[in-house]
Length: 115
Length: 113
Image (cartoon, rainbow over all chains, first blue to last red; front, side):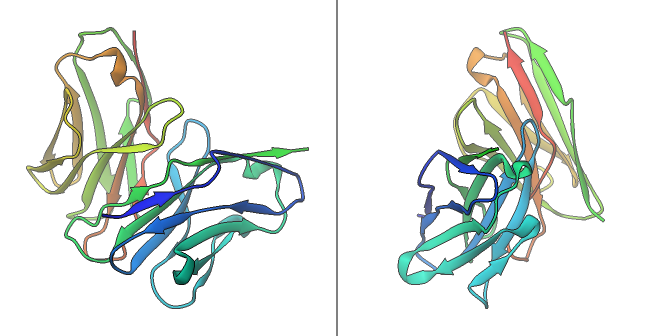
């Protein structure tokens, strides 16, 4: 069975500071990994994904994440936070086998950006 | 391009009343479809998924049900709502045979009073 742990349900950073949101996963087979963002009262939007190949993945809005197999991690970073980055962020994992290929989501991290 | 619609956007219903939420996808065929719920302060809970017309898998026992009467239509229903059914309901779709990315609809905010 696969699982996702997001350390820190709430993270606050100052505008212009580094954003680091942590995600660790467990999976019995090589995983596909995703980060989604959710703004209030909206659906989830895909930020970036790792499937195969380069372990450093760049996404939208200046975010990137690095897949580290030895650490079973997929942390999300952004060099300089912007007020518009305030939202909830979800890490998700999917095994590369299985018919419906469901996603398992972490519990989410609420990012607050302070002026 | 593909789009996903959910309606209604918001809904306030009394306890014991029925429920019907609708999700439709445009621009793709034979998608996998998913219903999730977000309760206040909690993460995403997968409720149902479907790999084809009439094929429904339930993840969590509850008083909700789902149906897929058409290829790109997914309906979430209840005969009698409970207070605990309040939450934000999200529909998602995924292409079959590719890298598991799911695309989410705008959601329905349900308040049961």
